[in-house]
Image (cartoon, rainbow, N blue to C red; front, side, top):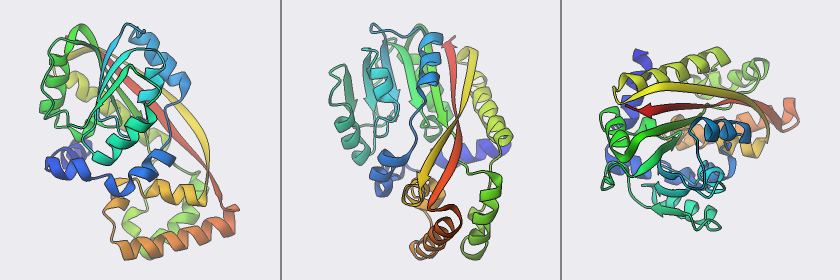
Length: 274
């Protein structure tokens, strides 16, 4: 748990300007290739949090509206906060059909608290970017009595371990520090720890958890674009990235017909305001 805490601190302690622009180089790629949240998972969330067209939702860090559209389709009133200017524009575009969605180009930290207004505070793979001291308290203060905090997570996409071993040989040559594989059990442990932080904040109770393992198929272009959206690759030296990606492309084309089968855990934590 200490490792995960340190990882979260490393994200949330970056200065606000850094956090606002972190994903800008990969915003378009993020919008194209980051996986959505499976409809089955969304259906479970809607049921547990009793969401309807009458619900008011505050979404924290909506990105390019990766999860927003699924909730917008309920007819719920949604205010989305997105500090990154590139994501903000993409989210506006993706939510154009939904008059019930309003997107503000601001961070959760800078947002002027509208206390006790929302039925739900939602964050999809974004809450770890906010300091826990600020995030849980402000979320609780924004919620009505008995309101819900919903945290969605898509864990990193993984090939099978056999495929990973073939790709790891490439990493060992050019970027050995990136050759890591997260087994399902490891990812489930991380998700459990993330849930314990919600209750540990002292602001929420009755934590509910659900997960789905989802399979997807990516072309080599999509896969390399996906890697480019993960933080370790965003800060990778461009020259190292070029040779690494060229070698990965070669390996995937030669051995896997230019396409990879990947799987990921999509999960939720839902807790009620104390």
